[in-house]
Amino acid sequence: MASTRAATDRRTHIVGWGMAVPERVVNNHDLCTMVDTSDEWIRQRTGIVERHIAGEGETTFSLALRAAQAALEVANLDPAQLDLVVVATVTPDYAFPATACLLQDALGAEGAAAFDLSAGCSGFVYGLSVVADLIAAGGYEHGLVIGAETLSRITDWTDRNTCVLFGDGAGAVVLQANGAPGGILASVLGADGSGKDLLIQPAGGSALPASIETVQARQHTVQMDGRQVFRFATRIMPDASRRVLAQAGLSVQDVSLVIPHQANDRILQAAARNLGIEEERMYSNLSRYGNTSSASIPMALCEAIDQGLVKRDDVILLTGFGAGLTWAATVLRWSLPLPVPVPSRQMAFWRSLRYRWAQLRSRWRRWWRWADAHLFQILYDEEGRRKRRKHE
Ligand code: ACO
Image: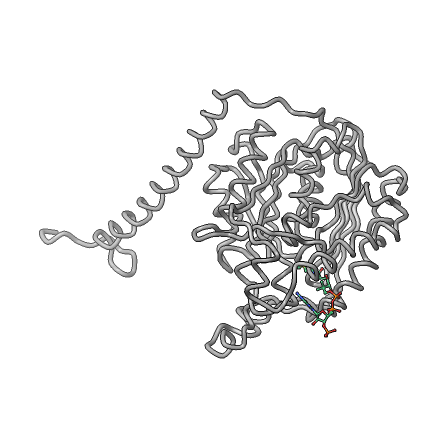
């Protein structure tokens, strides 16, 4: 699937961004105490040195919330103005309800529709493309797209083939409609479900519901054919990148910075070679975070912006691949002057009050739902008819 935003004056721009990672850091030496591996092997074969791992009480939702609040702060946007909240994740807090709904409630995004999106590590770019198109089509003004994961919760910590790769984190962007030039220019999304077994969490769904056997066989954890995924990634990332650039009428030379899915430094090097782009133009923070699946691209984007690597009018290419198999690429022209002004302490205070208020409102609604149900039992019979009083 492909989309190009050229025919209309209404464009979608990134106006806010934010990221969050757990405090706890696990380095390669720590992993050597858990599985038969070495710091040297992990560095050489993947480029990863350390990763952040969620602590007790930390979830995909809590990381997504921190990233979303940071992004709304940059955008200087009241959450009540959001029309859409989309969380791309393969590690939602629950199979249902959607993590996006938890977020909508916690932010106090009263007017927003909310849903999760599952497209493996391509999830964030899928979400960005879908929301950008919905906004540009005219139905919505503001969208929040988040890639958030706690892969550590579905990692088999006895499997050295996978446990050295993953980390936890979240990245968010706020999207806004306006007529300024630039913004999201084009997207390419794709899938090949014949590769479903290459990267899969086999149990827990309708195909293999949770049972003692599935738990004992560790089928609730990530299973991966690393070599095959590697081959797929080195082919598909340059391919999707070229196609999206062609759709936007741009060439590789026009690209200031590539923000690829952070899976393996060797994949990034191969993609850079294949695209004919210098490695310096291929952003990598893999060494510090590992592979955070759908969170990796928005986290890398946030860091690139904060490091001054993104300037007004720069062409930025986001490209990823993942479970499904899926792939996605988006090209955008950065339109916001940088750096953005730091919000005043007063603004920060009001914003924190607003989140507190959202929390209270949520509690009140839950209480009222409980009270309403009990009141209903007192006043009405099972068929919903009003009970008669004794004297009636
Ligand atoms: N430490 C030491 N040795 C190891 C480790 C480890 N952690 N892991 C594997 N090995 C061994 C293997 O057992 C094998 O030994 P053998 O030759 O005796 O059998 C040897 O190292 C080579 O194994 P390969 O699998 O060929 O190693 P490779 O160089 O391909 O690297 C890796 C493996 C890092 C997994 C690579 O294939 C890769 O990065 N693949 C892509 C992964 C990816 O991008 N996944 C996306 C997930 S995103 C999502 O949707 C969640």
